[in-house]
Length: 109
Image 1 (cartoon, helix red, strand yellow):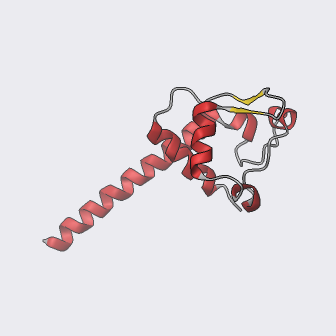
Image 2: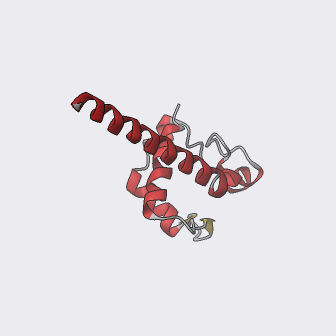
């Protein structure tokens, strides 16, 4: 009986993580792909215009922490001249943003 209960709990946890991953992917597509692209390379019209870094590269990801990524989503980013280069992400909860950070980390090659 104990093994059966553990298997059910693990199965439900797997469903929860799968749903979490799907939500992060949907949020990425809705809020991020216009500039960053599906793969995080920034090879989009807007990404090239803004000179977005390829966040699928390990060395680029090593340059920012999860906290940096959260701050960028919450507050947006400005270039060296003070011009907005990324608007804050609107309409996402703290948990949604944390899931997006995990999604971005999963883009790393």
